[in-house]
Length: 553
Ligand code: NA7
Image (cartoon, rainbow, N blue to C red):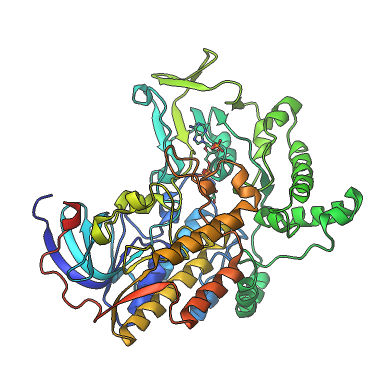
């Protein structure tokens, strides 16, 4: 675009209006700052706006996966189920937007298509829809860790005469599946949630599986009113307890170490954890992610439970995971494995027969067979954590772009800032607990840190802040070192970035647990923002009259 119009200057531009963006608008506006959030969707909600596929739920229980910043909000909102479905989570986020009057500072259907740091004025120039520019003293990338859906490069896709959809961009009006021949590629969380619903509606469903997954039953159920009342009474204490745990959700401690007792003695404890259901099976033993033997014991035990749910032993064998337990994100299911007991569902094991190409009538497999389809669903995941930022590709100091910077190594300091990109804050960026922590408190922590940091800058007459390159490298090495001690690095997964062709293979989160991370962040602040450098001056003074992305030109 040649001469984009520069329309406004803000103290803070927030990119995204999901859980992070909404809270950022509220919190930063509370400091008296002039903020504006830009959201590419037609509504607020982020992940919960886009993922409208049948069966979509959060894999963390709703009383934990919810904001804690407002006691009034906690007291007025009732969750209907342990694991609320997507429409309920989206309704909650819309309620938050209304309750705190956030919409007046959110511009929907507006995509941030670029941004560059202007060294002269020390401000960010932000490009919107390739047509308009605004500037800001600070930018907050509330872009979400699972925002960029991936469609694999299958030859001949354009030849398909049927409908193609991705779970991560499910149309508002839904997809007609009734009686149709449906195929779904992928068996991660999204597919595991969607498949039981699709199987009930479709004429026939083919599930194309490359890697079998571990899934633990959710045992989802309504929350009785008296339980919700008790939760509300207990919220302050619940949040405090959660804060001290590794993953941001309290769990019962194992009464023994897995290797200290016999299989018979372990069984009641594992059954108890299993009966509680869901993601917390990962906490059945504290060293499960670090000790191969403990991991294998739990993995084999879980596989036995999976086997019990599938009638046909040959199909069951194909559904058995062969990687360390929970090394890929543990799935939480409702009636998933039972799907394969239905006559209208066929499992296609892509390790035996690959996909050759798409043709007009369906998918041609490498054994020469054709699976005829009316609808093909991609449940093939996301370019996680770094994807949304790489798409915008901010230009920092000296014309350095984030794609260049992260081309060889994903360097970020504490997952909140990147050296060379002053006043650009990340939320749940690489090297923060993010994907291994309960997302909502992780977001609240980052937004609060950003608010405190902007306050600090203003009180100390500093115009800009950015991490030191050395501190950033040291932190990233520590992130790698801790991840290297876990089973996470032993498999390909979106945690490792290895689900995206050409993406750097590196573990994208801090695996050392919330408390160590939060202590480290607080310590840096107490030491006068150790690991950061400052540029003196008044933030936002000298906003550009006509914004330029000059370093991109
Ligand atoms: P995931 O967990 O990344 O799962 C994607 C699935 O798609 C997974 O089974 C992949 O197999 C499969 N996949 C990806 N590309 C292909 C190709 N080319 N061919 C066949 N199969 C493929 O994404 P989800 O949306 O399910 O979940 C993302 C997160 O959202 C989840 O972890 C929760 O935190 C919520 P693979 O395992 O790579 O062999």
